[in-house]
Image (cartoon, rainbow, N blue to C red; front, side, top):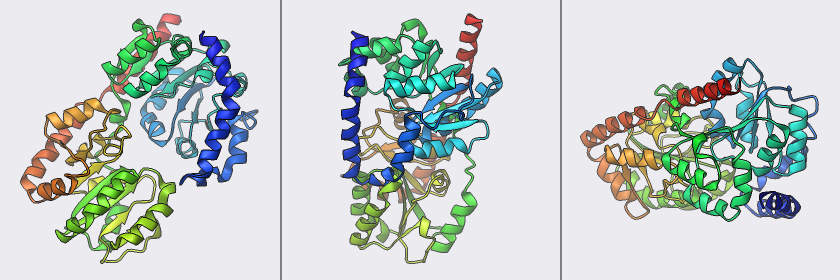
Amino acid sequence: MGLILLILTNLFFPFAALGVLLGFLFSARRGLLKHLKQELRERFGLEAEGEIPQNAVWLHCASVGEVMSMKGIIAQLKDFYGKDIIVTTTTQAGKETALKNPQITKAFLAPLDFYPSCRRFMRIAKPHRLFVVEREIWPNMLEAARQSGVPAALINGRISAKSARAYTLVKPLFARVLGSLRFAALHTQAAARRYEKLGIKKENIYVCGNVKYDTLSDNPSKLPEVDKILTALGWNGKQILVLGSTHPQEETMLFRAAPDLIKKGIKIIFAPRHLERRAEIADTLRQSGLHYAFISEANFDKNTDVLCADVMGMLQSLYARATLTFVGGSVAPRGAHNLLEPAILSKTVLFGKHFYNAPLTAQALLEFGGGVLVDENNFKETVLRLTADPAQLENMAQNARKTALSFKGATDKIMELVKTYERKTA
């Protein structure tokens, strides 16, 4: 049955791809299509011949966040195997990030999850090992690895309850490809239970935590740049609310609260999750009546109350200068982005109820008093209450840091698994 479903997905693939393409044409993210011709050549494996080093260790990541979180793993895999590292990503931004890592030999856009594309990539690359990261469970990629005899594993794996229910509808398909994994190193016990139900053998499932917490730094690299911006704005010594990885619903919440926050002397910085929405955000800000600026324009004046961080790689440094932080994707139902990114910097963290991608960290922050749950109705009042009580805010900030430190160690656990399985097959 699993093979039949796999064949059917490939038969319907062209129609699904056309639907996705049409969806992008009418979405705010249509700018992503400007390099479509070149991207399709790469995704069909037509650019790969002669470019991919053979017998390399292959990691497949979704985008920027996953590539960044794998930095420590990549360095250790390169050292352990003594082979080239190639990385494929789902997004162009992820590929560009991977290319900046000197430990990575080559980076490519991932082959489309269409068996001929995956099989072609596998035939050209002849990888030594395949590691898929987080929730990048692409059936044709894993099937091509299985058919080619390439050992594959899931590392830093996660899966939401919603995704698990959806995958259950085609369980024979996922049982076929997941059952071929050497091992799965997962974030949580909940993820372990879900993957076991989908077909990964229980004896091959391990709970190791999340490696992205091992990459948390309390010394962000762009602090000098951020400090120059804050000086130009005249914000030194001001209370600053920093919102990271925001989605439209959360920006609406912010803009509604902003006038009252500004009256209390609070300055606001928000970093949209998707930078291609910049034009849409600019229109909204123009209509809001707020005094705003964009970091990318470098046009700062002391009347600015709201700053849009429409640049890559600066969020952690912005968090470091915050009085209070909010992490996006949590009021908007996106599962929450990295809640511990501001926490490691001793910042109190506000977030919404949709934290299904990070339940353990969210619950720990709430339990130990380093985080506060907010929604569209109480966001403004919560910000005003906390910023009016610096002593309470400082106490909560220290609790947030202690919580963040308690989540480190996943990288070493995963590497021990890799070494254990290699010894078993030596």
